[in-house]
Length: 287
Ligand code: NAD
Image 1 (tube, rainbow, N blue to C red):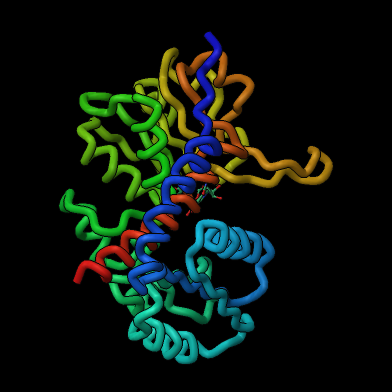
Image 2: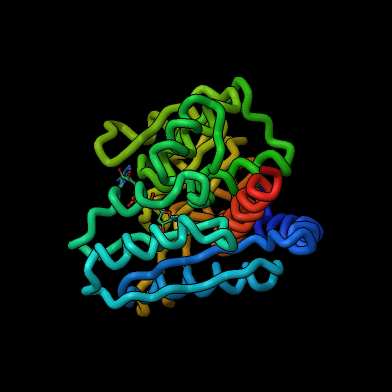
């Protein structure tokens, strides 16, 4: 069996094209969607992510602004800026790029963002709403995964879903979304005993681990749908290329459907950030 490749790039392009009319309608009414991305420090990967987010906004017609602070900035300065942005009528989404330097209380920063502008969906209020099955802002990466599954016609109700990873950014909200969609969900993590026992039961397997090619063909049930969230840079001696948490070449011979890296979940993540920001502006315009 050779797996169907779930093309996140193509779906992302289609969705972004469909956003243009919504952005134009909002702009015409004086509610052009606006996103501010705050970056603290000079982490190279974060710089790339922030650049990509800002340019995706510009391409879709949103207003976007990048605010960069040095790594040693006082947390109070960032909190003050967030308070200003919470009150700014032209800004509908505020995003703080993670991770923050160690002298920051990450949770305090995320909680300082108004829940109504928390387009990353990390505020406790939005996490709670998702847990209750009544989501307002869904974290962008798992939101993108669910959209990709939905658009690919992959049914989730009644399926065995296994998520590897329990982070607040990916694993936990992913598990909640799968649960809300009617799947029977198992969450595995670094302390899970006999991981392969669980993964081999999965009709839908989501890998969000951060370890290159960790999920091998032997860990996958024949005919499963495999979603690779991982983004790992291989060392220069191994070619320096990006790769996922799934051994693509091996798993594609076993799975029914599989996301590639790059071109799978990654493009969907930024797309859902745009979707959340547009939705925030639509809510504001409707008030
Ligand atoms: P994280 O480091 O916060 O979490 C990793 C999780 O993997 C942890 O819960 C840990 O328990 C689990 N884990 C680690 N080793 C394990 C093992 N041996 N067996 C089972 N579980 C194990 O990472 P994260 O922020 O959740 O990101 C995970 C991956 O997804 C990373 O590669 C990251 O770069 C990528 N990512 C991609 C996108 C995207 O847009 N595609 C977005 C966010 C994160």
